[in-house]
Length: 447
Image (cartoon, rainbow, N blue to C red; front, top):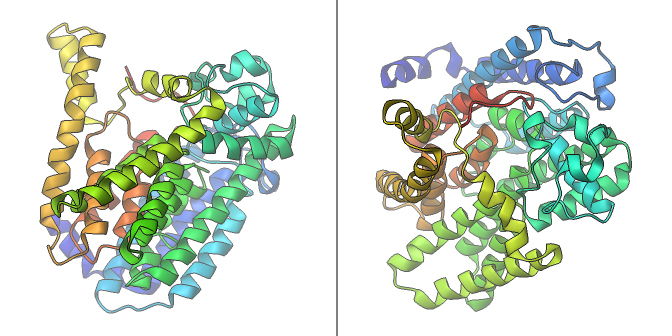
């Protein structure tokens, strides 16, 4: 792999014009998939710009276009990063503007590669009707024949919300605007997601030590645009709160800075609980420096922020129950999927035993991998960004259930870490996960 990368890094692919062109083609193919909805890779509905072209239906053309687009996006991203390392210095403001134009079109296309946005909309509709999306499933609360329920992936129609209370508020807001029209609710969610994505790009442009690198890693990253914006995933919001907390940790000192960090981490956990990884990453260097009081202050404020949010939907016990149940699932290509398959078929182990083993061992494995990544990055880099990246990247590698859009946390933290070899591996992992889970909401291989 290293030999291939070295050869490609000095090929025509590292020409900025070639790299940008390939990136654009990759994004265009992904957008055409959304524009020809409904098809094998999209939700069974149409957003405004998806009315402009005829549907591809169940044709194999849509998957071929999407997977080809993923490969081109990966090559384009690699080419732009190689060009940058060899002296290319594009105007990051222009890159952000171009990205904003692409995002403006993309948010009006049917979501591609996942049915998550339909689940968001259904949970929002339940909340808008006065129900509790953590206690009732879309099928129970809305009916099996509701347009909201029919848009949800078949596996998730009988699953309560696994997202945080702040995510539910966002979903409720969109559903309040959309009413009985599921497509409108999803469109609002897509617009909000696109605005946050560009907002993070603007923040990185203004606060990063290397704004060009940060912009290439986020706003101009075709792989990330395809996964986060085209898919409409909430991970964009988690990444936004995460980078805000990291930038505050780097720039604001004193007790009020710690309080603000805690609030931001708590709000991020109110979207998705995996945002706690950022808290672990920020606590790591503090603990190494024996700053016990600061660590405790941030942790307490974050915990209070989380608990306050959760009380609106019955408390942590109610809100976290669906998430705890879902956390027992294992998906391809997680290493635990292979262990589970070997355990079941070679040794006859029960699902419960394997699930318990996985839940105990994978956090330990994550810490070990994070420590290895942490040591591989130069010690003269700011620990407030190196540690969060190490933890989030390790989580992507060893967690039982990981999808391509989960890498948003690792990408947004990597924007602040100077050049290192982890970039290539994060790119490869993201694209591999995209190949494995660009399913349009169909059931992935799980146990």
